[in-house]
Length: 95
Image 1 (cartoon, one colour):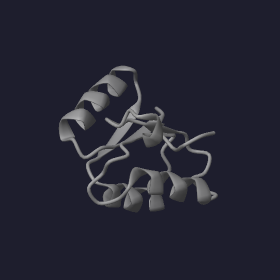
Image 2 (tube, helix red, strand yellow; image 1 turned 180 degrees about the vertical axis):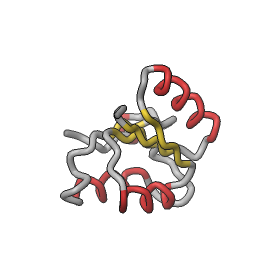
Image 3 (tube, helix red, strand yellow; image 1 turned 90 degrees about the vertical axis):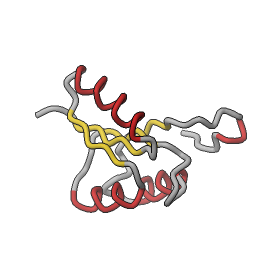
């Protein structure tokens, strides 16, 4: 069974680009273009990794990170932030 990566980004083209490249590397991929669909998904499934946009139209990506890190079942899932934000003040996550 391949490792499952969840991609959460409101840009469908970006979800597709990341999906294609991860599948070439033999990862399983589940893409989401809105945070609420992703949150419903993780209620019943556990990805091995999450690639997460911080600027989603329906939820703040930082809130999703905090939710996952506070949930014992999800807290060990690594999160990679994929965002257009680049200023140091835009990257409040540490550790």
